[in-house]
Image (cartoon, rainbow, N blue to C red; front, side, top):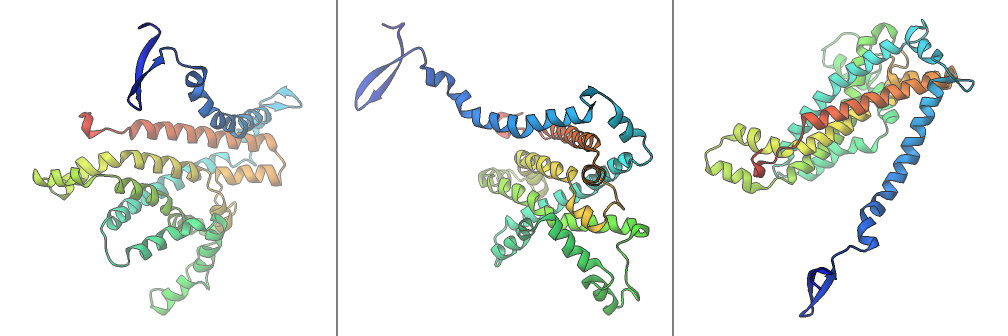
Amino acid sequence: MCKLFSKYILIRGVFIAMPSHPSFVEKYLPYILIAPALGYMLFFIGYPLIQAIYLAFTKNGALSLENLDYLLHSPFSKFYEALTNTFLLVIVIIPIQVAIALGLAMLFNIKFKGRNVALYSIILPLTISDVAAGLIWYTMLSTNGFFNKLFINLGITSEPIYFFGYQFRQMEFLAIVITEIWRATAIVFVIVFAGLQMISQEHIEAAEVFGANVWQRLRYIVFPMLLPSLQAALIIRTLFAFQIFGVVWTLAGRDIPILAGEAYYEQVELKHQGVAAIYALVIAGISVAIGYLYIKLFKAKYLEAGT
């Protein structure tokens, strides 16, 4: 009898013996639960990935490296320039957004009058598409736009500042950075702010009792416990940054080539499906590598475990 039953549960004052061997549902329940997510990934990620590899490295049904050769060596290809510009945008934009998001999260963690209104104002750009954001800032930064009129009226400049045009590519880059910071910082802020709300005040109060100053509380308590949220924010924002398209295409077109923009151009304008597929694979590969790096660098260290 002891071998057949290993657990007993109390139901209405009566101990009921439970079988030692799990039932079919109990045994396969985890697989049943993850089946929809697995099916989704196979259909919407796995199949397109296989199709992209097929388009990239075949021609007329046979294995071919012609598309790769065109991408790397053709004078009409802007792959290296697009790769450089995409990394530059990521390197410039992401740290600024994280710094701003952390500062705002710390500020809004303090309750003050008008806090909710200010919070909604910061989150508002999330409701605007990237193309719409590009058009808004294109209007404001144009020669007859809001900022040029403001600078001239204040006497800061005597003539308009030119932000757009091939000869002003550095200013176009600046316009893209400003637009992306305004549009997408809220993504990082929402995740970091939510993580900050989950940190128990008991830890901070205990540190205060032991004489920790503000910097020490931030460094040894708040930041380590915020790492999982920061990790998620960085992964999501970086993935979106490598896929940046609408803002750049609206503000600069091909003056500043980027990976997603060149993929669109090769696919839609030149009908080079294989080359566009390689661009897509490059973006996917970089995204996976950066995501793995973030997971390793920002691995959570739980204070309770002493690790």
